[in-house]
Length: 92
Image 1 (cartoon, rainbow, N blue to C red):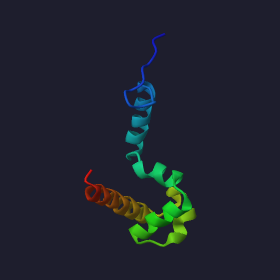
Image 2 (cartoon, rainbow, N blue to C red; image 1 turned 135 degrees about the vertical axis):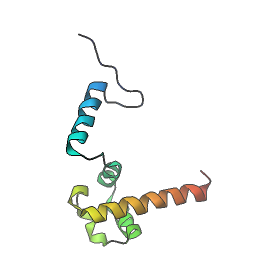
Image 3 (spheres, helix red, strand yellow; image 1 turned 60 degrees about the vertical axis):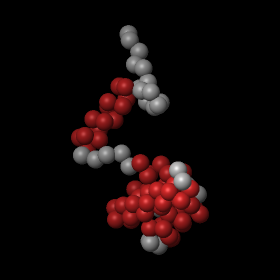
Image 4 (tube, rainbow, N blue to C red; image 1 turned 90 degrees about the horizontal axis):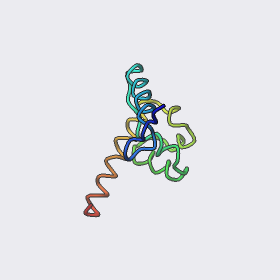
């Protein structure tokens, strides 16, 4: 039986990646890149994300999927913009 080689830069093999892509296609959605960042962030970091996005910091205890779509979009957009701004300020 042939073995499936992992994709370069990924710990996921080709078969698993194909299956995951098919799930996203069926669901009509795409992976949410910010979800892992939110999940792994401390409450203080989440508080900063909420403040930057202009939403109430009481959402820091919510799971990413427990937030309203509008709040997730605002956090993603504002924090992404802040990341770009910081990189520009640092000359990166």
